Length: 234
Image (tube, rainbow, N blue to C red; front, side, top):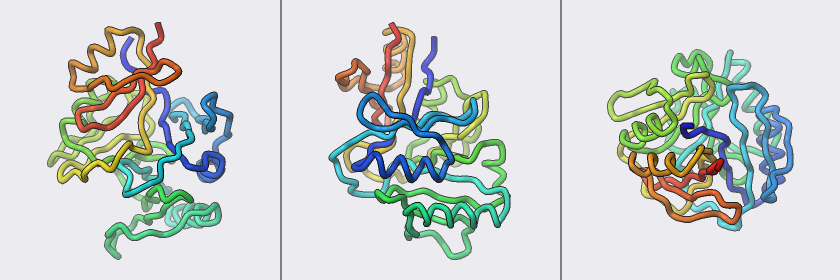
């Protein structure tokens, strides 16, 4: 059994409020998470669950990853932005240029996301969450391609991207310069593996084991120091 991507975890100071926002914007049903938060259930087989989990740690800077939401038409982009603002988002300035077509917003806890303009060819074969756009090195893109056995769908000028062979959202890394880490990432992966041998394989690829959670998940970091969780099935 290889490493499987089972969910994206999203730390929140107010999980109920954040689940209401993202559930409404992504049009997903919400279920209780056994660890005190909520799960946004996927609507299709190519979407991943989103676990919104409680934390007391406050956001201190830009997130290492953010969602790029897709649009089919200019009117579709306008509707998504309007819906996000209605649910509690706000416009933010991260240095985007006036001529750029995407709209940069932040959710009610300040987590950044972009609503991409229609006609973006790179995200044409994805879903509503076109990409989990991440800050990271070329090496970390290579690591995750090997760890998940997902093909590299972009590898140019130290920018990389991977996508499941079944389709769905891409995960992208922008290459250098990589911003300094400001504590634990608020967005991180929840994975599952078949046995300890797969943990050893991840370590051989450049990951590190940092501890265990109270429910037995292995806490790990990738070559850039980004946290992820691994459930060993047996």
